[in-house]
Amino acid sequence: MLNKKAFISLLITSSLLAACDEKAVAPQMMAPQVTVVTLESEPVTLTRELPGRTSPFKVAEVRPQVNGIIKQQMFREGSRVDANQPLYQLDDAIYQADVDSARAKLQGANAAMNIARLKAERTLGLIKNGAVSKQENDAAEADLQEARADVASARAELQRAEIQLDYAQITSPITGRIGKSTVTQGALVTANQAATLATVQQLDPIYVDVTQSAAELVSLRRALQAGSLDDATHLPVKILLEDGSEFEHQGKLEFAEASVDPSTGSVLLRVVVPNPDNMLLPGMYVRAIIGSGVRENAILVPQQSIARDPKGNTSAMVVDEENIVAQRSVRVSRTVGDRWLVEGGLQAGDRVVVAGLQKIRPGAPVQPSERQDEQPPAAAGDEKAAAGQGS
Image (cartoon, rainbow, N blue to C red; front, side):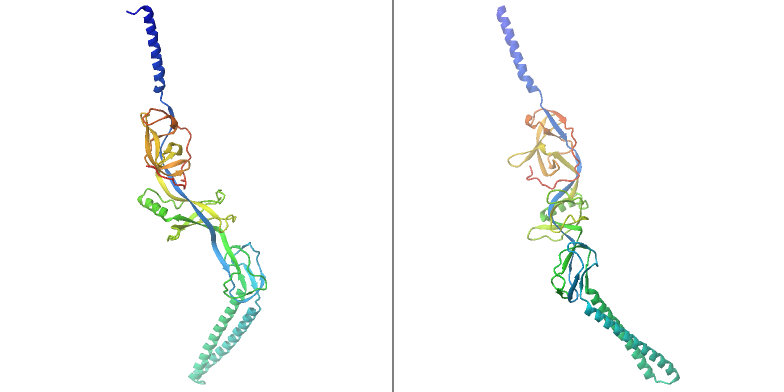
């Protein structure tokens, strides 16, 4: 039997060991706290940011239609001109003389026609009394018809001369902004010459020509045919200037080219953009954010919840109904704001860990709490695609 002193010593030792065991077990029993986000399906408009160049809505090259000497320049270079506004005045003395001559010929033809008409009327009256023969009456009628033809010819000649006189004043074909003049007062110009006198460009609205790869266009059309995407080409197009700022007016997709450029493998898309202040000038480099499709039941996951291994495979930590952590392989395609668009591996209702990832491992229990901050609505998807997709 143990004496009293040994018994007390054994009792103290047992108590200390039990206390140590409790201290060692206690930390293992406490599950770490993590922050989760419960995924929900939502409609997302997928967009694509494409590079492009601006080009005029209309371009008119001003050329003379008659020969002559530039007598006057009637516009200020770089200013806005209206359709049919006079730009150049040629020396029109010769053309004015041609008009006067043609007008005189018309007057003479009218006088001859009146004489022929009176003769034909007298002959018609005399033939009833037998005073003239039928042959003479026919000749008088033929002379009247010839006189009428001469009047019509003279009238056409006058009209032609007046047109030539009008062409001596060169006008703007369209409304727009005119560039520099390539000729000065006193220069000789010829009808339909190759060199332009000036160029007028309509800049409001203005075109933005962007290019999209043919492979991407084919993929998009397949998705539309399969029903996984809804058409979004009717949505407004945002224009980003070269400095990254957004242009205040949104454009509209006008059309897509029906052929592929064999040198680049891309398709031309044309966007029409209002440009009332002429902020956009032809030849500027811009970027256009164009809607490519709408995914009605898209799953978006916060970027910080997606991990990528050295092979490029992506995964996420998911908390199940029993608050146990599981690692899930995930496929993502592109970013939408600060979230990834999920292509597979996650679904609505999954609770994905977004904070506390360094404290957990697969199969371990956790204490999840829902993140309280609100995500911005996914009205437009980012154009950037994922660098690589996970398994």
